[in-house]
Amino acid sequence: MKTTLFLLCLALPVAFTIATKDFDTVKVEGGMISGTLNQDGDIHIFRGIPFAAPPVGDLRWKAPQPVKPWSGVRKCDAFGPSPMQGTPNPFGPWSAEFLIPKEPISEDCLYLNVWSGAKSSSEKRPVLVWIYGGGFNSGGAGCAIYDGEATAKKGIIFVSANYRVGPFGFFAHPELTKESPHQASGNYGLMDQVAALQWVRKNIAQFGGDPNNVTLAGQSAGSMSVNCMVATPLAKGLFTKAIAESGASFANPHPTLQQGEEAGLKMAQALGASSLAELRAKPAEEILKKAQGRGPIIDGYVLPASIPAIFAAGKENNVALLTGWNEDEGMSFGPPKNAEAYRKQIEQQYGDKAEQFLKYYPGGTDAEAASSQMKISRDMIFGAQNYTWANIASKQGKPVYVYRFMRKIPATGEYARYGAFHTGEVAYIYDNLKFIDRKLRPLEPTDSELARNMSGFIANFIKTGNPNGKGLPQWPSYSIKEKQVMVFGDKTVAAQLPDGPALDFLFSTISKR
Image 1 (cartoon, helix red, strand yellow):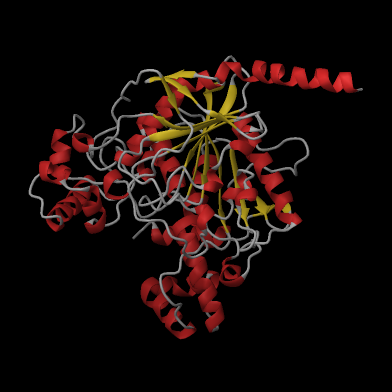
Image 2 (image 1 turned 90 degrees about the vertical axis):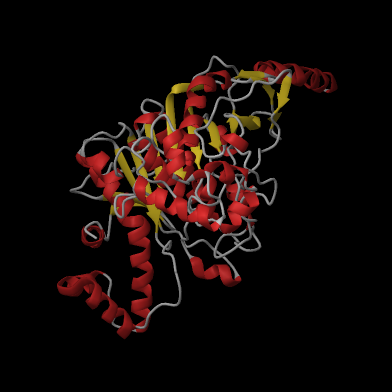
């Protein structure tokens, strides 16, 4: 028996070496890189791979440029800096695991990360590219809940990439438009996302990935980004499936280039800069302090037209779609109005449609009015957007799957009031409950089962474009007529979308403003 154990111990390092030798170093654009192994020794992790030149100095507010080559083997064992933004501090329902690391934070931020369980570069594993949220003003790929190990263990190559945010990622100005070969400015963060997808197209086979089987996924502003990537001609052919969690732009279209330039001129004035050269010479900290929030614009290049117009013309990229939103992700922008003030506001705002509006979002009591105000916020910002996208894609005959995340995540103290909050589903979808702070959120066996189901569905969709598979409940494809969705709550069940008529009505009102 002792001899057998001894021989097994001798054999293990040999088997381990055979399983991993292809990835001791990997050749990518720019040079050779090395990474690390997870604790189990079955996932190769490469953090902080540069996919473009640092967008600093004269490259501030320019399209991402080719990566600068390096000599030797570059260690990619730590996340690159998060994009320039304020110091991350917990707020609302978002505790530390939902936020970027406190440091490093820098303009020099164009790095991506790869998790791969492939044993050889000759494998062709499906690929997921993750785009984070943060209102286009914050966020980064280094958040704990965005870890790719669990997804990689399901046979998928997981990629997460940074993109510029705030005034560094979304800033238009007449001089920037003039110097651009495309006569456009403002969407640098979106161009970073395209550059990351192009990097994946060219390099992911080196990690055992299939460049022809790429799924693009994002949440919140990341989901809005996925919406933009599906719309932009620049991303054509770079991915075949889209996962959009709580975010799209089918109502309240993005500002025009002219509006973006006007905002840029005001920002330059606030910074005391009379030229683009002076703006580029300004310290990043000063720009961050004085600049206001920014987001995508209709620049005529990245976005040739508004999202609704691109989809209405059928010019979007052809992809399968998995989309949904959360039950309690309405945003509160102050104390709720009481019942009387709420009804008065609705009557003033919606006129002869007020009675119908109040049927869907009633306000008979103060409590009912407060609840309706949160639901209106949820549906205006998220629900009606993703619902409309699902309807358009279904009408065009594309594969569509819709979910509703309704699990009231167990929590203590002030966190208990947030329920199925915005971003709450991410740790379930990517099987990352291990990163959740259990003192704040004492999760239950129900949560582990839900994470197993959700991550299983997502893995299947990434692989095949269909979330269904062995050991999982049946998830019906979505159609405008049936409106069947998968409900992720205390149980995982298929059901008819309960508030389709309300979403139809709400979208018809906000899209005509």
